[in-house]
Length: 405
Ligand SMILES: NC(=O)c1ccc[n+]([C@@H]2O[C@H](COP(=O)([O-])OP(=O)(O)OC[C@H]3O[C@@H](n4cnc5c(N)ncnc54)[C@H](OP(=O)(O)O)[C@@H]3O)[C@@H](O)[C@H]2O)c1
Image 1: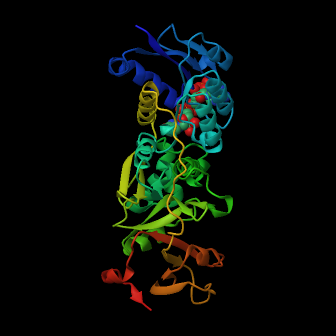
Image 2 (image 1 turned 135 degrees about the vertical axis):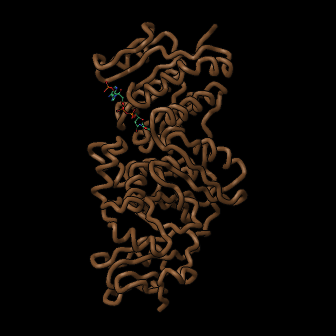
Image 3 (image 1 turned 135 degrees about the horizontal axis):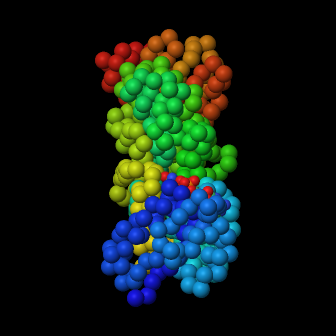
Protein backbone atom coordinates (compact mmCIF):
# COMPACT_ATOMS: atom_id res chain seq x y z
CA UNK A 1 0.00 0.00 0.00
CA UNK A 2 1.37 3.45 -0.84
CA UNK A 3 1.73 5.92 2.00
CA UNK A 4 1.37 9.59 2.87
CA UNK A 5 4.74 10.44 4.43
CA UNK A 6 5.06 13.06 7.11
CA UNK A 7 7.99 15.01 8.54
CA UNK A 8 7.05 16.06 12.08
CA UNK A 9 8.83 19.13 13.48
CA UNK A 10 8.77 19.00 17.29
CA UNK A 11 8.08 16.17 19.71
CA UNK A 12 6.71 18.03 22.71
CA UNK A 13 3.08 18.24 23.85
CA UNK A 14 1.68 18.81 20.36
CA UNK A 15 4.17 16.69 18.37
CA UNK A 16 3.63 13.67 20.62
CA UNK A 17 -0.15 14.17 20.41
CA UNK A 18 0.04 14.12 16.60
CA UNK A 19 2.28 11.05 16.54
CA UNK A 20 0.06 9.10 18.97
CA UNK A 21 -3.13 10.10 17.16
CA UNK A 22 -1.75 8.93 13.82
CA UNK A 23 -0.67 5.60 15.39
CA UNK A 24 -3.89 5.05 17.32
CA UNK A 25 -6.27 6.02 14.51
CA UNK A 26 -4.29 4.54 11.59
CA UNK A 27 -7.27 2.38 10.53
CA UNK A 28 -9.59 5.38 10.44
CA UNK A 29 -7.06 7.45 8.45
CA UNK A 30 -6.45 4.63 5.97
CA UNK A 31 -10.19 4.36 5.42
CA UNK A 32 -10.30 8.08 4.59
CA UNK A 33 -7.16 8.27 2.43
CA UNK A 34 -7.03 4.76 1.03
CA UNK A 35 -3.33 4.90 2.00
CA UNK A 36 -1.17 4.39 5.04
CA UNK A 37 -0.30 7.61 6.95
CA UNK A 38 3.28 7.39 8.14
CA UNK A 39 5.52 9.69 10.21
CA UNK A 40 8.91 9.15 8.53
CA UNK A 41 11.03 11.57 10.55
CA UNK A 42 10.84 13.74 13.66
CA UNK A 43 12.86 16.90 14.31
CA UNK A 44 13.77 17.88 17.89
CA UNK A 45 16.28 20.19 19.48
CA UNK A 46 17.86 17.60 21.74
CA UNK A 47 17.81 14.03 20.37
CA UNK A 48 19.14 12.46 23.60
CA UNK A 49 15.94 13.51 25.46
CA UNK A 50 13.67 11.47 23.20
CA UNK A 51 12.84 7.97 22.07
CA UNK A 52 10.36 6.94 19.38
CA UNK A 53 8.55 3.58 19.61
CA UNK A 54 9.03 2.79 15.90
CA UNK A 55 12.69 2.11 14.90
CA UNK A 56 11.94 3.04 11.31
CA UNK A 57 11.21 6.66 12.27
CA UNK A 58 14.24 8.91 11.89
CA UNK A 59 14.80 11.11 14.95
CA UNK A 60 17.06 14.06 14.16
CA UNK A 61 18.13 17.53 15.24
CA UNK A 62 19.00 18.52 11.68
CA UNK A 63 16.19 19.78 9.43
CA UNK A 64 18.29 18.99 6.36
CA UNK A 65 17.76 15.26 7.12
CA UNK A 66 14.03 15.85 6.82
CA UNK A 67 13.97 18.04 3.74
CA UNK A 68 16.30 15.55 2.00
CA UNK A 69 14.02 12.53 2.60
CA UNK A 70 13.45 10.79 -0.74
CA UNK A 71 9.67 10.94 -0.20
CA UNK A 72 8.06 13.70 1.84
CA UNK A 73 4.41 14.68 1.34
CA UNK A 74 3.53 16.76 4.40
CA UNK A 75 5.54 18.74 6.95
CA UNK A 76 3.83 19.37 10.29
CA UNK A 77 5.26 22.21 12.36
CA UNK A 78 4.91 21.80 16.13
CA UNK A 79 7.98 23.71 17.28
CA UNK A 80 8.09 27.06 19.06
CA UNK A 81 8.98 30.61 18.04
CA UNK A 82 9.07 32.58 14.80
CA UNK A 83 12.34 30.96 13.72
CA UNK A 84 13.46 28.46 12.61
CA UNK A 85 9.84 27.41 11.88
CA UNK A 86 9.32 30.05 9.18
CA UNK A 87 12.51 29.14 7.32
CA UNK A 88 11.73 25.40 7.55
CA UNK A 89 8.20 25.81 6.22
CA UNK A 90 9.42 27.99 3.34
CA UNK A 91 11.87 25.26 2.39
CA UNK A 92 9.18 22.58 2.67
CA UNK A 93 6.74 24.52 0.49
CA UNK A 94 9.44 25.24 -2.09
CA UNK A 95 10.10 21.50 -2.26
CA UNK A 96 6.39 20.99 -3.03
CA UNK A 97 5.32 19.62 0.37
CA UNK A 98 1.99 20.45 1.96
CA UNK A 99 2.47 22.11 5.35
CA UNK A 100 0.46 22.24 8.55
CA UNK A 101 1.37 24.43 11.50
CA UNK A 102 0.35 24.85 15.15
CA UNK A 103 2.91 27.62 15.66
CA UNK A 104 0.72 30.71 16.21
CA UNK A 105 3.51 33.17 16.92
CA UNK A 106 5.30 32.27 13.68
CA UNK A 107 2.05 32.23 11.72
CA UNK A 108 0.87 35.60 13.10
CA UNK A 109 4.04 37.17 11.72
CA UNK A 110 4.51 35.16 8.51
CA UNK A 111 1.08 33.69 7.69
CA UNK A 112 0.36 35.88 4.68
CA UNK A 113 3.80 35.25 3.15
CA UNK A 114 3.44 31.49 3.65
CA UNK A 115 -0.09 31.58 2.17
CA UNK A 116 1.24 33.35 -0.92
CA UNK A 117 4.11 30.90 -1.26
CA UNK A 118 1.81 27.89 -0.81
CA UNK A 119 -0.47 29.21 -3.54
CA UNK A 120 2.45 29.78 -5.90
CA UNK A 121 3.63 26.21 -5.30
CA UNK A 122 0.15 24.73 -5.48
CA UNK A 123 0.37 23.08 -2.05
CA UNK A 124 -2.00 23.21 0.93
CA UNK A 125 -1.36 25.15 4.10
CA UNK A 126 -3.24 24.13 7.25
CA UNK A 127 -3.28 26.33 10.35
CA UNK A 128 -6.39 25.20 12.26
CA UNK A 129 -4.29 24.52 15.39
CA UNK A 130 -2.97 28.09 15.58
CA UNK A 131 -6.29 29.42 16.95
CA UNK A 132 -8.50 27.88 19.62
CA UNK A 133 -6.74 24.49 19.92
CA UNK A 134 -9.30 21.81 19.11
CA UNK A 135 -12.13 24.19 18.13
CA UNK A 136 -12.64 24.01 14.34
CA UNK A 137 -12.76 27.78 14.00
CA UNK A 138 -10.65 28.17 10.86
CA UNK A 139 -12.66 25.70 8.79
CA UNK A 140 -15.93 27.13 10.11
CA UNK A 141 -14.89 30.60 9.00
CA UNK A 142 -13.78 29.30 5.61
CA UNK A 143 -17.22 27.74 5.13
CA UNK A 144 -19.04 30.84 6.43
CA UNK A 145 -17.21 33.12 4.07
CA UNK A 146 -18.61 31.38 1.04
CA UNK A 147 -21.79 33.44 1.29
CA UNK A 148 -21.73 35.39 4.57
CA UNK A 149 -19.79 38.51 5.36
CA UNK A 150 -18.31 38.38 8.83
CA UNK A 151 -18.93 41.59 10.71
CA UNK A 152 -17.16 40.99 13.99
CA UNK A 153 -15.36 38.24 15.88
CA UNK A 154 -15.04 38.15 19.64
CA UNK A 155 -13.19 35.36 21.37
CA UNK A 156 -11.79 34.01 24.58
CA UNK A 157 -8.60 32.76 22.98
CA UNK A 158 -6.44 31.99 26.00
CA UNK A 159 -7.47 29.32 28.48
CA UNK A 160 -4.96 30.36 31.14
CA UNK A 161 -6.26 33.91 31.55
CA UNK A 162 -9.86 32.63 31.47
CA UNK A 163 -9.01 30.07 34.16
CA UNK A 164 -7.51 32.81 36.36
CA UNK A 165 -10.55 35.10 36.01
CA UNK A 166 -12.95 32.21 36.67
CA UNK A 167 -10.98 31.10 39.76
CA UNK A 168 -10.83 34.65 41.14
CA UNK A 169 -14.62 34.98 40.86
CA UNK A 170 -15.65 31.47 41.92
CA UNK A 171 -13.04 30.93 44.67
CA UNK A 172 -12.76 34.55 45.80
CA UNK A 173 -9.00 34.61 45.11
CA UNK A 174 -6.55 37.40 44.37
CA UNK A 175 -4.94 37.49 40.94
CA UNK A 176 -1.65 36.17 42.40
CA UNK A 177 -3.38 33.26 44.17
CA UNK A 178 -5.28 32.25 41.02
CA UNK A 179 -2.11 32.46 38.89
CA UNK A 180 -0.28 30.19 41.35
CA UNK A 181 -3.03 27.56 41.03
CA UNK A 182 -2.89 27.84 37.21
CA UNK A 183 0.86 27.18 37.38
CA UNK A 184 0.43 24.23 39.78
CA UNK A 185 -2.13 22.69 37.41
CA UNK A 186 0.22 23.15 34.43
CA UNK A 187 -2.07 25.67 32.67
CA UNK A 188 0.39 28.55 33.01
CA UNK A 189 4.11 28.53 32.18
CA UNK A 190 6.72 29.46 34.80
CA UNK A 191 6.88 32.75 32.85
CA UNK A 192 3.16 33.41 32.27
CA UNK A 193 3.61 36.74 30.44
CA UNK A 194 2.44 35.43 27.04
CA UNK A 195 -0.92 34.38 28.49
CA UNK A 196 -1.75 36.97 31.15
CA UNK A 197 -0.48 39.97 29.17
CA UNK A 198 -2.49 38.95 26.09
CA UNK A 199 0.36 38.24 23.63
CA UNK A 200 -0.86 34.68 22.93
CA UNK A 201 -4.44 35.87 22.30
CA UNK A 202 -3.13 38.70 20.14
CA UNK A 203 -1.19 36.31 17.85
CA UNK A 204 -4.40 34.30 17.38
CA UNK A 205 -6.39 37.48 16.71
CA UNK A 206 -3.88 38.44 14.01
CA UNK A 207 -4.36 35.03 12.34
CA UNK A 208 -8.16 35.50 12.44
CA UNK A 209 -7.87 39.03 11.07
CA UNK A 210 -5.77 37.86 8.11
CA UNK A 211 -8.20 35.02 7.48
CA UNK A 212 -11.41 37.02 7.68
CA UNK A 213 -10.46 40.48 6.49
CA UNK A 214 -7.43 39.67 4.33
CA UNK A 215 -5.08 41.82 6.41
CA UNK A 216 -3.50 42.21 9.83
CA UNK A 217 -4.91 44.74 12.34
CA UNK A 218 -3.64 48.29 11.89
CA UNK A 219 -0.91 49.24 14.38
CA UNK A 220 -2.69 52.39 15.62
CA UNK A 221 -5.99 50.50 15.97
CA UNK A 222 -4.63 47.68 18.10
CA UNK A 223 -4.77 47.38 21.86
CA UNK A 224 -3.23 44.57 23.89
CA UNK A 225 -3.95 44.74 27.58
CA UNK A 226 -3.49 41.99 30.15
CA UNK A 227 -5.55 40.96 33.16
CA UNK A 228 -2.98 41.68 35.87
CA UNK A 229 -4.69 44.90 37.10
CA UNK A 230 -8.05 43.28 37.84
CA UNK A 231 -8.79 43.10 41.54
CA UNK A 232 -11.11 40.83 43.48
CA UNK A 233 -13.04 43.95 44.57
CA UNK A 234 -13.74 44.82 40.91
CA UNK A 235 -14.81 41.23 40.23
CA UNK A 236 -17.24 41.34 43.18
CA UNK A 237 -18.65 44.69 42.09
CA UNK A 238 -19.13 43.42 38.53
CA UNK A 239 -20.85 40.32 39.93
CA UNK A 240 -23.30 42.52 41.86
CA UNK A 241 -24.21 44.15 38.52
CA UNK A 242 -24.77 40.78 36.81
CA UNK A 243 -21.47 41.07 34.92
CA UNK A 244 -18.38 38.88 34.57
CA UNK A 245 -14.86 39.90 33.57
CA UNK A 246 -13.56 38.12 30.49
CA UNK A 247 -10.27 38.57 28.60
CA UNK A 248 -11.61 39.04 25.09
CA UNK A 249 -10.05 39.49 21.67
CA UNK A 250 -12.28 41.54 19.32
CA UNK A 251 -11.59 41.93 15.63
CA UNK A 252 -13.63 44.10 13.28
CA UNK A 253 -13.28 46.19 10.18
CA UNK A 254 -13.44 49.96 10.53
CA UNK A 255 -13.53 51.56 7.09
CA UNK A 256 -10.28 50.44 5.41
CA UNK A 257 -8.51 49.24 8.53
CA UNK A 258 -8.94 46.43 11.03
CA UNK A 259 -9.39 47.21 14.69
CA UNK A 260 -8.17 44.54 17.08
CA UNK A 261 -8.31 44.70 20.84
CA UNK A 262 -7.27 42.13 23.41
CA UNK A 263 -8.34 43.42 26.81
CA UNK A 264 -10.41 42.64 29.89
CA UNK A 265 -14.07 43.49 29.30
CA UNK A 266 -17.34 42.87 31.10
CA UNK A 267 -20.02 40.55 29.76
CA UNK A 268 -23.66 40.30 30.74
CA UNK A 269 -25.54 37.00 30.80
CA UNK A 270 -27.00 37.53 27.33
CA UNK A 271 -23.51 37.61 25.81
CA UNK A 272 -22.27 34.36 24.17
CA UNK A 273 -18.97 34.48 26.10
CA UNK A 274 -20.56 34.99 29.55
CA UNK A 275 -20.73 31.26 30.37
CA UNK A 276 -17.30 30.28 29.05
CA UNK A 277 -15.39 29.28 32.17
CA UNK A 278 -12.06 27.78 33.21
CA UNK A 279 -9.59 26.75 30.51
CA UNK A 280 -12.26 26.64 27.80
CA UNK A 281 -11.89 28.84 24.71
CA UNK A 282 -14.77 30.21 22.64
CA UNK A 283 -15.26 32.26 19.52
CA UNK A 284 -18.38 34.26 18.74
CA UNK A 285 -18.85 35.23 15.09
CA UNK A 286 -21.37 37.79 13.85
CA UNK A 287 -22.09 37.33 10.16
CA UNK A 288 -24.64 39.12 8.00
CA UNK A 289 -26.78 36.17 6.85
CA UNK A 290 -26.46 33.55 9.57
CA UNK A 291 -26.36 35.94 12.55
CA UNK A 292 -24.35 34.87 15.57
CA UNK A 293 -22.49 31.57 15.75
CA UNK A 294 -20.56 30.59 18.85
CA UNK A 295 -18.07 27.77 19.06
CA UNK A 296 -16.67 26.58 22.36
CA UNK A 297 -14.18 23.87 23.30
CA UNK A 298 -10.72 22.99 24.55
CA UNK A 299 -8.34 25.72 23.44
CA UNK A 300 -5.12 23.81 24.07
CA UNK A 301 -3.70 20.47 25.15
CA UNK A 302 -2.12 17.43 23.54
CA UNK A 303 -5.11 15.76 21.86
CA UNK A 304 -7.37 18.77 21.16
CA UNK A 305 -4.46 20.37 19.27
CA UNK A 306 -3.58 17.08 17.57
CA UNK A 307 -7.24 16.83 16.52
CA UNK A 308 -7.01 20.19 14.72
CA UNK A 309 -3.81 19.08 12.96
CA UNK A 310 -5.27 15.74 11.89
CA UNK A 311 -8.36 17.48 10.52
CA UNK A 312 -6.03 19.71 8.50
CA UNK A 313 -4.32 16.56 7.24
CA UNK A 314 -7.67 15.35 5.92
CA UNK A 315 -8.09 18.61 3.96
CA UNK A 316 -4.55 18.22 2.63
CA UNK A 317 -5.42 14.70 1.50
CA UNK A 318 -8.49 16.01 -0.28
CA UNK A 319 -6.36 18.58 -2.10
CA UNK A 320 -7.86 21.72 -0.57
CA UNK A 321 -5.81 24.72 -1.63
CA UNK A 322 -5.73 27.82 0.61
CA UNK A 323 -8.34 30.40 -0.33
CA UNK A 324 -7.76 34.13 -0.48
CA UNK A 325 -9.94 36.04 1.96
CA UNK A 326 -10.46 39.57 0.87
CA UNK A 327 -14.18 40.06 1.26
CA UNK A 328 -15.11 41.64 4.55
CA UNK A 329 -18.01 43.52 6.04
CA UNK A 330 -19.43 46.44 4.09
CA UNK A 331 -17.84 49.75 5.03
CA UNK A 332 -19.29 52.24 7.46
CA UNK A 333 -21.36 49.89 9.58
CA UNK A 334 -19.55 50.40 12.92
CA UNK A 335 -22.23 52.51 14.58
CA UNK A 336 -22.57 51.54 18.18
CA UNK A 337 -21.89 53.33 21.41
CA UNK A 338 -20.68 50.89 24.02
CA UNK A 339 -21.53 50.93 27.69
CA UNK A 340 -18.60 51.14 30.13
CA UNK A 341 -18.09 50.62 33.83
CA UNK A 342 -15.64 53.08 35.29
CA UNK A 343 -13.77 52.74 38.55
CA UNK A 344 -12.52 55.98 40.11
CA UNK A 345 -13.81 59.37 41.13
CA UNK A 346 -15.71 60.40 38.01
CA UNK A 347 -16.98 63.56 39.79
CA UNK A 348 -13.46 64.91 39.93
CA UNK A 349 -12.27 63.62 36.57
CA UNK A 350 -12.68 65.65 33.42
CA UNK A 351 -14.73 63.45 31.12
CA UNK A 352 -14.07 64.00 27.42
CA UNK A 353 -16.91 65.18 25.20
CA UNK A 354 -19.21 62.32 24.23
CA UNK A 355 -19.02 60.47 27.58
CA UNK A 356 -22.47 60.30 29.16
CA UNK A 357 -22.82 59.00 32.72
CA UNK A 358 -26.02 56.98 32.93
CA UNK A 359 -25.81 55.42 36.39
CA UNK A 360 -23.89 55.80 39.59
CA UNK A 361 -23.39 52.45 41.31
CA UNK A 362 -21.32 53.70 44.25
CA UNK A 363 -19.04 56.62 45.07
CA UNK A 364 -16.34 55.05 42.93
CA UNK A 365 -18.22 53.11 40.27
CA UNK A 366 -20.09 54.66 37.34
CA UNK A 367 -21.83 53.27 34.31
CA UNK A 368 -21.69 55.40 31.20
CA UNK A 369 -21.99 55.41 27.44
CA UNK A 370 -19.18 56.56 25.20
CA UNK A 371 -17.54 55.82 21.89
CA UNK A 372 -14.20 53.99 21.81
CA UNK A 373 -12.59 57.26 20.69
CA UNK A 374 -14.03 59.25 23.62
CA UNK A 375 -12.86 56.63 26.11
CA UNK A 376 -9.37 56.62 24.63
CA UNK A 377 -9.15 60.32 25.68
CA UNK A 378 -9.92 59.59 29.36
CA UNK A 379 -7.22 60.46 31.86
CA UNK A 380 -6.51 56.93 33.12
CA UNK A 381 -4.27 58.00 36.00
CA UNK A 382 -7.37 58.22 38.24
CA UNK A 383 -9.89 56.12 36.33
CA UNK A 384 -10.08 52.60 34.94
CA UNK A 385 -12.70 51.88 32.28
CA UNK A 386 -13.94 48.42 31.21
CA UNK A 387 -16.23 47.98 28.23
CA UNK A 388 -19.41 45.94 28.66
CA UNK A 389 -19.93 43.72 25.61
CA UNK A 390 -23.41 43.10 24.25
CA UNK A 391 -26.70 44.84 25.05
CA UNK A 392 -26.24 45.59 28.73
CA UNK A 393 -29.15 47.56 30.19
CA UNK A 394 -28.23 48.72 33.72
CA UNK A 395 -31.69 50.20 34.42
CA UNK A 396 -33.20 46.72 34.14
CA UNK A 397 -31.09 45.45 37.04
CA UNK A 398 -33.00 47.35 39.75
CA UNK A 399 -32.39 44.71 42.36
CA UNK A 400 -28.65 45.21 41.92
CA UNK A 401 -28.68 48.63 43.64
CA UNK A 402 -27.98 50.66 40.51
CA UNK A 403 -28.92 54.28 41.00
CA UNK A 404 -29.70 56.34 37.91
CA UNK A 405 -28.26 59.86 37.96
N1 LIG B 1 0.60 23.04 23.83
C1 LIG B 1 -0.56 23.38 23.31
O1 LIG B 1 -1.62 23.06 23.85
C2 LIG B 1 -0.60 24.15 22.00
C3 LIG B 1 -1.84 24.45 21.43
C4 LIG B 1 -1.89 25.10 20.19
C5 LIG B 1 -0.70 25.47 19.57
N2 LIG B 1 0.50 25.20 20.17
C6 LIG B 1 1.74 25.57 19.47
O2 LIG B 1 2.38 24.36 19.05
C7 LIG B 1 3.80 24.51 19.09
C8 LIG B 1 4.39 23.41 19.98
O3 LIG B 1 3.89 23.56 21.28
P1 LIG B 1 4.23 22.48 22.42
O4 LIG B 1 3.36 22.83 23.57
O5 LIG B 1 4.20 21.12 21.85
O6 LIG B 1 5.73 22.87 22.77
P2 LIG B 1 6.80 21.98 23.57
O7 LIG B 1 6.12 20.96 24.40
O8 LIG B 1 7.73 22.95 24.20
O9 LIG B 1 7.57 21.18 22.41
C9 LIG B 1 8.33 21.85 21.45
C10 LIG B 1 9.10 20.81 20.63
O10 LIG B 1 9.78 21.50 19.60
C11 LIG B 1 11.17 21.14 19.61
N3 LIG B 1 11.93 22.35 19.22
C12 LIG B 1 11.85 23.58 19.77
N4 LIG B 1 12.66 24.43 19.12
C13 LIG B 1 13.27 23.69 18.16
C14 LIG B 1 14.25 23.98 17.17
N5 LIG B 1 14.77 25.20 17.04
N6 LIG B 1 14.65 22.99 16.35
C15 LIG B 1 14.12 21.75 16.46
N7 LIG B 1 13.20 21.40 17.38
C16 LIG B 1 12.79 22.37 18.21
C17 LIG B 1 11.47 20.72 21.04
O11 LIG B 1 12.58 19.85 21.04
P3 LIG B 1 13.20 19.29 22.42
O12 LIG B 1 12.11 18.44 23.01
O13 LIG B 1 14.39 18.50 22.03
O14 LIG B 1 13.51 20.49 23.26
C18 LIG B 1 10.15 20.05 21.43
O15 LIG B 1 10.15 18.70 21.05
C19 LIG B 1 4.05 25.92 19.61
O16 LIG B 1 4.30 26.77 18.52
C20 LIG B 1 2.75 26.30 20.31
O17 LIG B 1 2.51 27.69 20.29
C21 LIG B 1 0.57 24.53 21.37
